[in-house]
Image 1: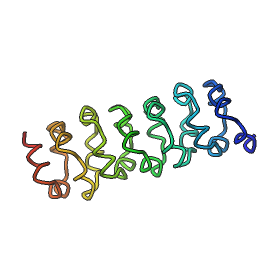
Image 2: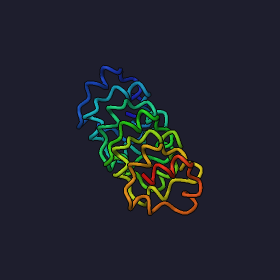
Image 3: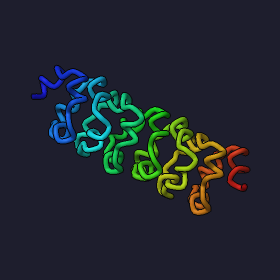
Image 4: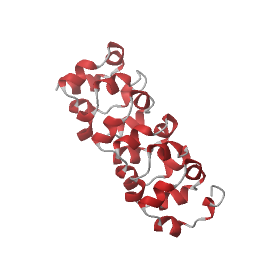
Length: 178
């Protein structure tokens, strides 16, 4: 039951298989402690439903280990609440693959802070969609590193809005021109 879920030890959480994790209700998932969430094996967490992922609290998402984040499917990443995406640490952002990053909605992407944007690996920049790049706020566009700016392809550079370009630093502009 939902009230009993908090009584499971971390060892018991580790012992759950993917079917058992998938059988947890969203109410039960929301009641898990951060220690219990971290104890779920990454392969089992990867089988969680999008409803279960959406029911994770911001604290639970922020507690996820980087290998757990890396194991999430694209539909799971896209299912994250906007508060949860904002709460991702820079280490968790680094753990996301280009495919996972491309799965973020423009609404989710718009809410990434400048330190989160700077944490996107340069090899993953090419995976970002035009819509995602255009969703970056003018106050956060300066969070992109010069290495990331160099990694942008011509289509991505051409998609930057005039308002975004106006906010770029001299170093960022020089990096684009390389």
